[in-house]
Amino acid sequence: MIVRKFSASKLKHLLPLSVFKHSSTNLSLSPFSSNPISKTLNPNPHFLFSHSKLRPFSSSQSKPSLAFTRDGNFDETLSQSLFICPGCGVQMQDSDPVQPGYFIKPSQKDPNYRSRIDRRPVAEEPEISDSLKKGLLVEDENPNPNPNPNPNLVEKPVVCARCHSLRHYGKVKDPTVENLLPEFDFDHTVGRRLVSTSGTRSVVLMVVDASDFDGSFPKRVAKMVSATIDENYTAWKIGKSGNVPRVVLVVTKIDLLPSSLSPTRFEHWVRQRAREGGANKLTSVHLVSSVRDWGLKNLVDDIVQLAGRRGNVWAIGAQNAGKSTLINLIGKHAGGKLTHLTEAPVPGTTLGIVRVEGVLTGAAKLFDTPGLLNPHQITTRLAGEEQKLVHVSKELKPRTYRIKAGHSVHIAGLARLDVEELSVDTVYITVWASPYLPLHMGKTENACTMVEDHFGRQLQPPIGERRVKELGKWERKEFRVSGTSWDSSSVDVAVAGLGWFAVGLKGEAVLGVWTYDGVDLILRNSLLPHRSQNFEVAGFTVSKIVSKADQASNKSGQSQKRRKSSDPKAAAHSLPSPLTANAG
Image 1 (cartoon, rainbow, N blue to C red):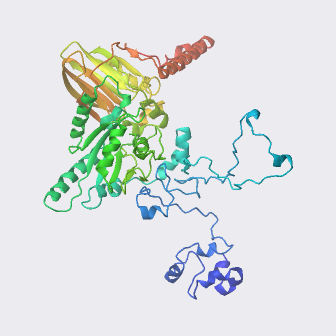
Image 2 (image 1 turned 180 degrees about the vertical axis):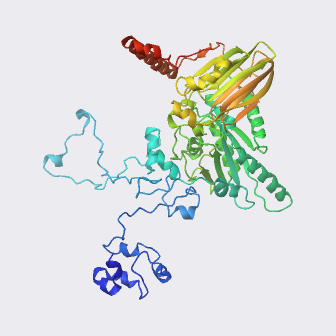
Image 3 (image 1 turned 30 degrees about the horizontal axis):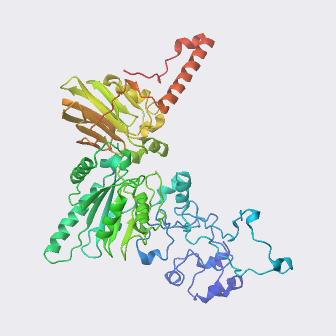
């Protein structure tokens, strides 16, 4: 505290002359000074201490928070001064491991640290030279060997710790760091460029997940782009400047749908759903599978033609819709150029805009954007282990019930369908969802006790009783449906982010569908009209989740019996286990 009272002349012998070279008589030595002149001469409050061995007058100096954006490397001039992760688009830094974008610079290795071993048999080796027999050592003509023996091998880029963890372990390294990133402002970063009447041509790739079409469809973007097309096209017709975006709808993961589905029927269904979602100005529709390599060549040819020599191509879609995987394969098909976007079955893999260079012809650019967060999808509320159960990774298989009025079907602890009224005797309910999700069918009058007795146990997700309350309030929505055939499903009731119930009947029905508040329920024409030939029975479906819950229930019951036998008084006060499965 005494040091603060000293003048510059008394402290001069303690400080290097470079400090006073930039100072004046009005310069305050305290970094906390409010003198406007000192701020002008020294805008950095830690300038003094960066040139000396002194430390700020504080016992607990906190690290300055790093400013991050989610614009990625969109701006070419700005991105040259920033280090952007080529996997997710976040700004990288190596100073603070608890901040987003942290990375560890790889150490330099000797080029010969993995020298190749000559595995030729001794018999195939050349004879010993005469010079070596005479004791003469011939120097190598190439004293500096090529550090990269295979020049065609692409060197792996340096990525952030988050991308490294996702690529090698399939999970985020530190989930708490995700909350430190600013929210991606789509309207400011991408939207204003799409609606601009000037500039280069824009091609919008709307990427939608085939297994969750309505949940992953970007309705807000579709309506905005459609309105821009109408407005700019009108201006272009009268001779004004008008940049008319081209919209390409890409439906990914079609390998998850049954192979019996007709591509023609599916494309007709997709166009109808897209029009109802606001995309009424589609340039083309492509059905692709990144896993099976279906439809990618035609997609690439279409993109190259629409973008031309100078266009901008924007890949837009919901989180985990498959944009990054799609762009990596587009780069492979377009010109053999490998891209390094991080792929993982985790929502929100891409954090900032990633400009993919050298994929399209000329000066055309391809951009990967962060996944749009759709709060109406139930997956946005689930934890990592719960998302794995909901995630569809294999071809969907139907699970069909034939039930009467007054019965209900649960999909895990996430959705329930009640058959409340029927004009016929029975109805066919087919569940299309992840095979890891347990189902339950029973009487509706017993459905209310399912939440207390089985949610978080036999019916997972949610995993654990605590998570049941965290997901929100259980709400009901009524649907009146009708059908004209017993042989196929007529309508679907889709739960955004989860799957759907397909309803088949020849008559009319009143259905009550329950899920958590804020999750979208959509009534639509049936996507997959066929059903399973083998019907499910009442009660729980056979699954690992139900088996583990039943084992826990049995152990609890056995321990209670042992306590009863050892303590007769406890038998009078003991209660039955609430985990006993009731098929209704």
